[in-house]
Length: 357
Image 1 (tube, rainbow, N blue to C red):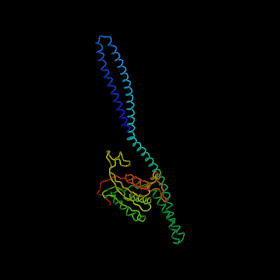
Image 2: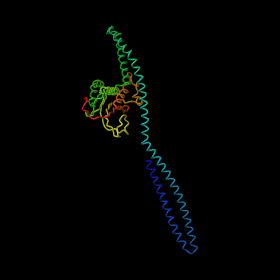
Image 3: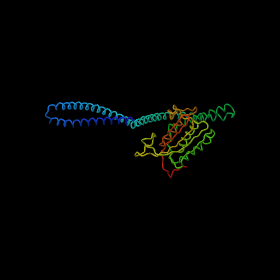
Image 4: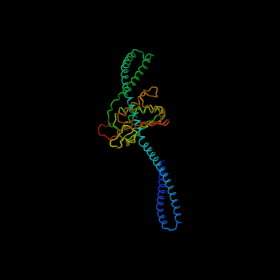
C-alpha cells in the first residue's frame, strides 16, 4: 500500500513537472515570433506593448522555472523514499527469513554442542553407577531368599528391588541418550509400523477409555530401524495418553508430499539441484491438554520433565533417533485442544528386498 501511494505521488509530481516544462517551452517558442512582428512596426508606440509582453514573459518563465525546481526536488525526495521503502520490503522479504534461519542454525549448533558434552559426561557417570547397582541387586536377590515371604522385611526388599530396577532403566536411558546405537535400516510400510504400536498399547489405553485410531496408507514406505521406531512411537503415544488422562482419542496418521528446501523450516531435507524433496510424515495427534508455553521452550532438553517419576530423556532420545534416520521431530500444540507430533522422514520407492510388513 505504501509503495502504491508513493508511486502515485511520484507520477503526479512527474506529470506536473512535465506540464510546466511544456508550458515553458511553448512560451519560449511564441516569444521570438511576437518579437519579430514587433520589429517591423515603424511607430515608436508599438515598442512599449512588446516590452510589457517581454516583462510578462520573463516573470512567467521565472515563476515556472521556480515551480519546476520545487517539483523536481519533491520528485527526487519521493524517488528516494520509494527506493528506501522498496529496499526495506525486499530486505524483510528476503534477508529477514535468512537472518532468522541463521539464528536458528546457530542455536541448533549450540544445542548440539551442549548435548555432546552432556552425553560424554552422562555416559561416564552411568557406567560408574551401573557397576555398583548390579552388585547391590545381586546381594539383594540373595538376601530375599532368606526372608519370610509375608514379612515386612521381604516387602521392604521387594520395594528396594523395584527401585533398583527403576534406577537401572534410568541408567539405560542415559546411556542410550549419550551413545545412541546406529540404526539397522529396512524398508517398512507406515501402516505396519502403526499396527505394531496399536497391538502393544491398545489394551492398556482401553483401560483409560482412550481410543487409538490408525489412519495410514499401505503404500507409504520408509526405511527405518523398526525396533528404534517402536520406541519413538511408544514414547509419543504414552505421552499423548498422559496428556489426555481419561476419555480421549489418539490418532496415528500418515501424510506425504514435496518439501521445498528454500521454504521449508524442516531440517535435514536439502535436496540436490534445488528440487523439492519427497517426505513421509508420521503424525501422532491427541485430544489432550496441550503443552504450556513455558514447557515448550524446554521440551527437548534432556533431563527436563514435568512428571514425578520421569527422567526427562524420552523426547530427547526420540528426537535423536529420528535425526539418526535423517529426519526431524516437529510438533504443533494448542492448550486445551491437543498436540500433534510429526516425524518427518525422507520418502522412498518400494524396495523388493529387505521388506518387512
